[in-house]
Length: 256
Image (cartoon, rainbow, N blue to C red; front, side, top):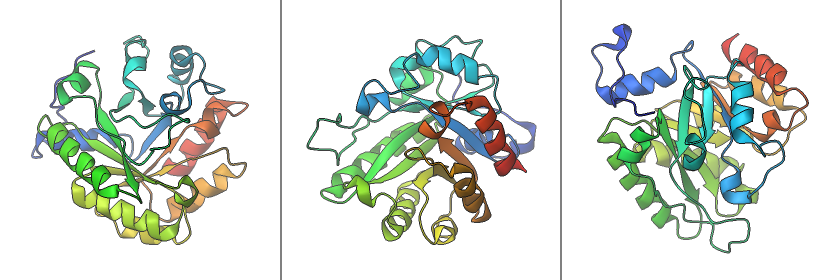
């Protein structure tokens, strides 16, 4: 599923290859809505995605723009099934649920491999707290490599102590740090004063869904009112009673 590093659109003809590819992520009305299916890399088997290829085939007919997947899963996908959908490939790995060291998520997938996998973008973790210099250096080096082949980079902001991942100051600080390191898109969790997070970033922000939230639609509306440019929801979608219906409802919120 190799793709050329340059994607051409007549309305962005004057942009660089990287800028064109970033614009392509938001080609559906200026927003990006992806279903996150990368959880098993950390947790092993996860309810709702025991058969990821079949799930993706089922959701490929939904209004979602694409999927966040791990490298191994891309090899199971039918090119016809994901035609027209964005593939954002997790290029960093984190410790498993048994690990004592979850701060560092090294980038392990090369830029060339991402292109061979058919990735439209890479996604990395920036983990703040503890020895977060290691995480920042890793993200900066990976962005530099991926940008050399015009591959857009999404950076997800986490806290070393996951319970602090929605801390307002951490989200605001982490988002701006990721942008300063070169991220093209930020994936962050909802927090108080969310508009401050969005307004403080010079690049698009998409909302992470996090654990199951019975009021996910309200959270989504609030985030859109704060200026987010999309959603990256996982468990809230694939563990719902009707994922396709929920995707349609969320799509209506983000695109009006």
